[in-house]
Structure formats: C-alpha cells, structure tokens
Amino acid sequence: MDSDADQAMELLRHSGQLSAQDAQRLLEEARGLVASGKISRCVFRVFMELIQNIRLHGAEGSASVRIYRETDGALSVETVNPASKSDAIRALARAEEAASHADSLAPLIRARRFMPHDENEAGAGLGLLEVSRLCSCALKVRENAGQAGNSELVIKARLEHKNSL
Amino acid sequence: MTDLQLQAGINTPKVSLPSTGNEGWIEGNCYPENAFAFFEPILTWLRNYRADGGKGMRICVKLDYFNTSSSKCLLDLLQTLQDANSEGCAFSVRWLYCEDDPDMRDNGEEFAQDTRIPFEIRPY
Image (cartoon, rainbow over all chains, first blue to last red):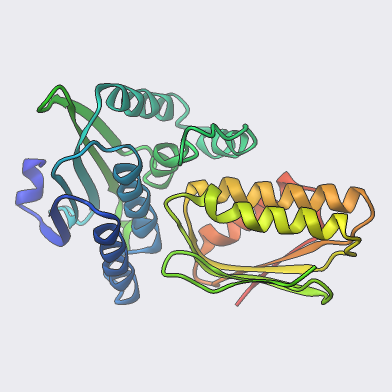
C-alpha cells in the first residue's frame, strides 16, 4: 500500500481474497458511503470499476482495496492485487493509453463502445480508461514482482475534492 | 411472444418489456460482473419481438449506476432498437437521471448523440 495512505483517513478497506460476495458487500458499503454523503457518486464509480477489474483480471491470492481521504482532502481509491504478467502488462498499457489521450478520453471511450466485443473477455476493456477519465487522469498503475510468477498490480486513482464529495 | 420480466438484483436492474404494451422499463443498478451475459436475453427478446411483428414502444431507462461493460451493452441495445426502427418499428427512449447526478445526464446525452432514436432526457 502507498505509505501516504497510512497517514490518511480510511473510509473503506478490505484485505484478503476478493470473492464475488466480498465484492458485492464492498460495493454495498461504498453505496452506503454515497448515501451518507461521505463520498461522491464519482468515487463510487471509480471504486466499482477497480473492484471489478480485480474480479475479472486478478489472479488467485490476497488483494487489498481501500478508499481513503488524503491529508490534503482529496479522496483516493487504491487496489493491490496479484495478476498474471500478461494482465499486468495490459493494465500498464491501458494506463499509458489513457495518459496519452488525456484530453480526449471521453470520445475515445465512446468510440471503443462501438468495437465488437471479444467473446473471450468478460469485460469491455474500458474500465481503466473510464477511471482515468473520472479522476482527470490522476491514475497511477505500477507493477511489482509478485509470488509464483505473478505480478503485483498497484492501481491508485486520486480524485480531487470537486470530484470526490 | 411473452413479456420479458427480470427482477432487480443487487447489481442488476429490473427489466420489464411488454409484448403488447407501449412502455417498457429498465430500472435500478446495472453493474453485473458479466454485463454481456446479463444483456444477452434482453437483446434476444428484442430481436424476437421485432421478428414477431412488434410495433415498438417507449423504453424508459432509469439507472443509478452502470459499469463500463454495461455502457457497451446499453449501446448494443440502442443499436438494436435503431435497427428495428429502420425496419418500421417505432422505439423511443426516455432516459431518466437523478438531477444531482450530472454524469448520468451526460451519459444520456452521449447515447442520444451516438444513436438515431427518438431520445428524451429528463431529470427525476
């Protein structure tokens, strides 16, 4: 986890396997945070995409997810999960693509919706692009060496105050 | 031809499409992990409806949240309606968004621009 997070106020946290039931429970909790005014719908949308990113592309093993308020007031969503080397490389490539289209993410996402669905994929390949759009490209993706030949994928999306609450 | 009725799940919307009525609904949350599997029976029903001589209807879409996979599926659904309209059906869409959720309004505007269907966007 990012050491900055240790200094900040956690609003939601999960560590361990991320089953479908865990993901559902976390999304319910996050919706509760929206209902109580602690996070915005935008933060929920980022969290939802990142949780589902782990579910669809993560490898077996313990994952860590959290929503926390940073000391400057911004809200961040951070996920750390094992991923195959190929999935980690794909996530990094997607983040680079998002960064290179920083001024045109919305039209890029709209155009991608028209592309045929790869039936080998459960997702549409749009999640990280959308997260990047929602957090105005304040998205960091990094890959660390993991266990059993896997990578450890770390994704942090930071939402400035106007988008967080 | 029977009506399509899907009960709302925790992360899937209630879907109500009548075989003979003039208004259908898709309402709730829409972020299933596999959106393509969720939408497939809806798209199949719409194709069968058209093949069965259905005249079209207004479909009210009132979603709180949807994930990116569902956004692609919603576009597929709208394109299916558009295809039906090009063959004589009269589908239209009423996109309802929570008035304090501008992202959902913007999504409706994008879908309206990306398809050629009578499209009405309203806050609630």
